Length: 261
Image 1 (tube, rainbow, N blue to C red):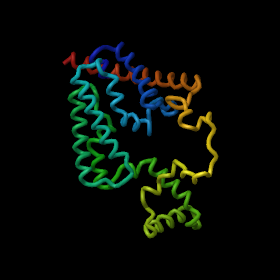
Image 2: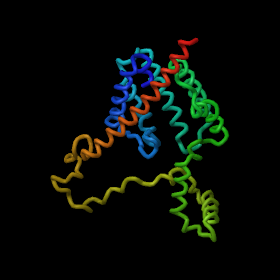
Image 3: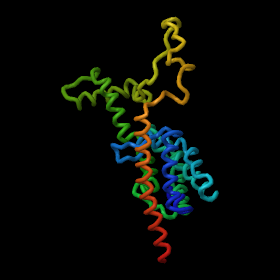
Image 4: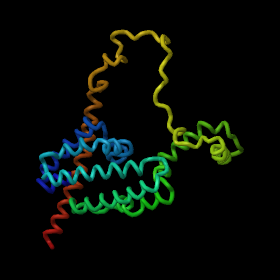
């Protein structure tokens, strides 16, 4: 929304912030997390990046076309960077080289097209350190919190097979046994999310009014209660107001600095 503020006005930027929050809620199906400062985190961030075309359409007609194209290009580059950083698997050398080039192009385009945006510590890490970590360790996500939690869950499921006097000893037994058993693969960290289909004739046919049947489901997904929808709208507007205030202050500070030069 800082782009809308810089190209139009603060009032337009605030109105746009509310429409963007609604686009996230309705089209992208992503919601801010109140328990985490009211921002988007984790899976919702990846969902927004995957639906970047929806985000880019929200600024059509609000900013010049050259800014719109630069904005779209930024989202494309960020999607490529995110896919590499969030994959819990070893990254090949060719992809590391492409990651470094994409990171450089991302920062250069951001500073050239949106000069009021400062290089934050996280962006500095993506530009200068992430590629080095990929070269040295082969992955960044394998050492992240979610990857560690996945391995913790895998250990809990199999700890009974490798008992020891202490939990550390049991974990060591599991780690030693996995290479021998050829079980140390990413597929073992993914828990099944769907049941296997039943044998033919194992279940009775569903009734004509059964809501579990596809043709009887409500369009647009299952209905939600009014309180849940109102709560989601309220949290989205709170996020929009907080981000708008920050962006408005950032653009204002930049314009004042340019005017004083």
